[in-house]
Image (cartoon, rainbow over all chains, first blue to last red; front, top):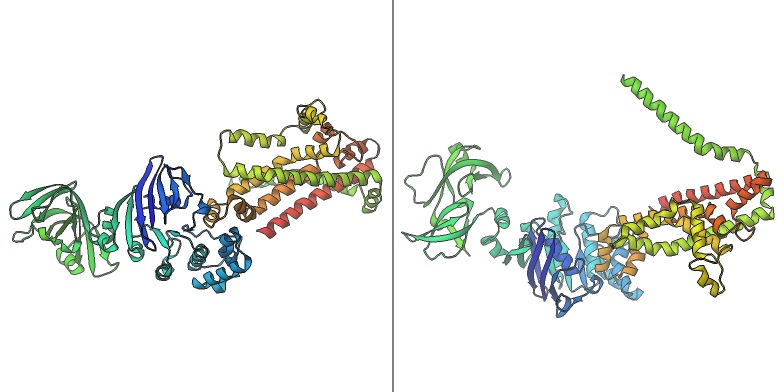
Length: 358
Length: 263
């Protein structure tokens, strides 16, 4: 079990968050660049010192600002994979993997055996004598994992492990990496800017924004009920944050958002709920709909049209309505309505198509 | 118009390169044509020349080792730590490169001389530095240190931070990390610094003659011997000069080859 409370501030950036990872589980930290993801890993690794906080790993205090404990990096028993793996360029593959054991003055014979086992475990035994020059990104990643895991770390820290790979190999390496991580009994924190990777790798996911965790939970929950525009943009859902809610006749509530009002079903919606509308629930009309049953009707221009999937059957239509909406319609509907950037359209959805959660 | 400018630029570049050749290469050539290899070899047998050669090799080697031992930790600290007044320390390290060697010798004399700041206490222990071979080594090390510190500090600074960080996460302490990561990764710079320092020590004159004096067999290194011999035996001076040039040339050439091997 890893428990951490971390706070640091430099310049205009402030980070303040709490983490808890059960033993053997993988927590994915997802967020935009600059949200503080890599900083969290550096704080846990002891490469950067928090201004305040506490890090407790399996009962051992690694850092405690109140008790003035700050274990140096080399005593923390971690595995750290920076973005481009940082394999040591003056050493061959075997010497890279053996580096940590040699630093710990492990007997020669044991080094040989443990390295051999690690190289085999990560499928790079045939590369042992190779220099780094000419290794593929996927091979470098395996060597870096072998180098970290041969030391049996308590905590594995992965910083965007797929970012250094080109698009062609990324999907394959992602599958391999997932299988390898699943077989490791090590508590792991995985940092990524890509919500898809978060969903693939995480048993639990924490969304980071501006140095704070804005949402944490299972991948399923994250996708169904996003609480950040970052994740909503990824799943493609229309997300608004309600400021106030007023009950309306007919079992409805009117929720004010910063970008305009939305009608939702139910009168019990209190507080400041999140409102999510799937783009597929939104219908487009060329003229004002008169006989529809939809309670939410907005008028605005088409701002952008993006085929979804790329060159696919459906089109995501970005609208300049208030609140701004994204609708997903068929190519046939686009043709029928004569949609083009700048066309004025009406967009509508039912109050029952809205999901609200706080 | 454009043609004219091209001609002008080419003429200037040609003249500049030619001028530099005259300035740097011609004197060396003129020295080498003044003496035949046979003459050189016979003069090598003369005791005062052999003495100067051996003393120069011994002292400059010791000075290089001294600079290496004292300079490596200093260069590492300068490259890896931030502290108030760092700029001033950096300038102090560079200073011997620009002050006149005679001034350097005078400073050393004022510090380690019989009446000097430290010399007095040393005298109590029966140690007297000036006019000894040890003083030659000190003068050479003093003048050579910046030629080592500069490149090595720069080399350490360019070793990417994350290599040391990853070494730390693998359990390497700072000491281990220095010898197994920092030093191998900046080996070309360390080689360059060592060779430059050695060459500078070999050619040291002003600080040596001021601080260590000019005693044949004790403090009279090759550059000092050149100066002395010039007055009465030009042939001996030329022999010593040729030796010095060949030694320095060989040293710097070895450095180039060493660096390309390491890279």
